[in-house]
Length: 207
Image 1 (cartoon, rainbow, N blue to C red):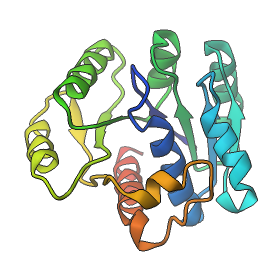
Image 2 (cartoon, helix red, strand yellow; image 1 turned 180 degrees about the horizontal axis):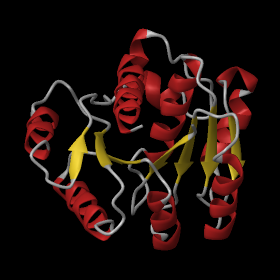
Image 3 (tube, one colour; image 1 turned 90 degrees about the horizontal axis):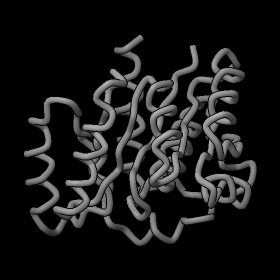
Image 4 (cartoon, one colour; image 1 turned 180 degrees about the vertical axis):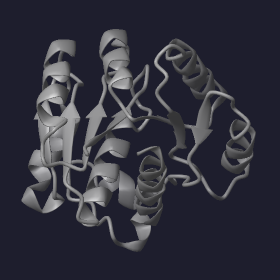
């Protein structure tokens, strides 16, 4: 059974596309069949997958409108896939809502600043009627300082959303892999693999 994961954000710069590609690459490296649907008009996820080549291990398609996204989800939900991951655009409420409603799990990547966390709260509130499980993924975390860990502990008490145990660090190897093939099984990407394993486990319990 194909499971759908949407990666959501109301503004750019939240590591949405990076989270999408790292997660898709990590799952593919574990032998999972993955399709990425790129609903962002910039099509960065699609371009990233194309530049990385077949070695990235998954396919990507552009779905820039709510209609094309819904059509792609309907056509591929019964396909021979393990996961569909939807990279949503910032600020498009219709696509965000369509993706979240159709998903088995919604991921919200975010940094650790007060402003970013307020945006996350607004997004969670806007999804109150969807019923889709939500997980917050803290990204670009500087592990040398306590802010990320403290925020992680405080968010764990959130009633509507869970918080991923994996903290995605601020690391040059991740940043420099943009539009390239991530060496996902190497040590600099260990937290990305941990996130994939965590999500797999959570989704398996939902079946």
